[in-house]
Image 1 (cartoon, rainbow, N blue to C red):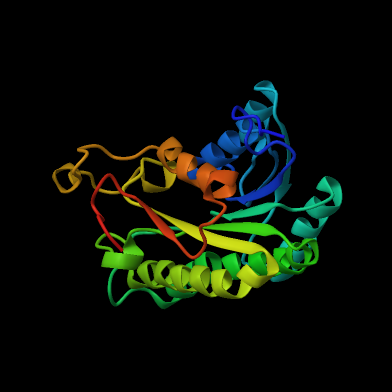
Image 2: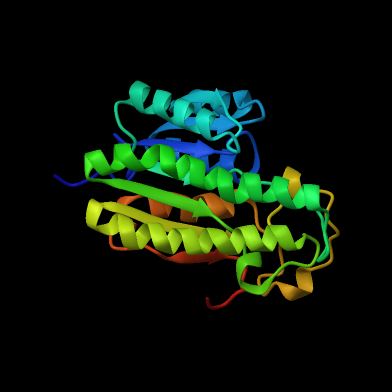
Length: 248
């Protein structure tokens, strides 16, 4: 039976972390518009995202979640699976991006690694057994162009965490493939979000498309990776950088 091109994710249950604002909120709205039932999670209040999805006719439920807490990830994602009856895709978007330096601050180093790297692994661990039992699953990890070329405004810990996420993506893809689990990543460039609002501007000359990206620019590739059109892709990193990164 042909799928409905207007709702390529109809019948799917997808869990999105960092869904209160920015890329996570835009991705959640896009996935819901494509027909998915969406679980929203963040340490911040997801009510605005939840309301916008419901007002548009979509279906979603929100949880408060600190992804650096492994037990909380296991509990919340477990609740979502119980509510939705299955988990078709997990979008690991939650993260932090504070300004920093090469020498850095040791407390900040641990915080960034705990959230960006350990937190992503906690969420993957919570989804892994249910997806394995289903014989199908899809994991999308949000990294950054900093994994490839390093960062300037951010600290070493940020670039290190995002590079590690690419290694994690490829490891999950290789080991998940025989189980029916795919894993891909998106690597955004300069994206206008609340998290980057205070960062210095002036990098437009570095961007071939001559503009910063929007959260919706990243939500599209995330939706693609969650959908059927990427069914034969795993272990890939999609650069969403306006042309800054032309190959990886």
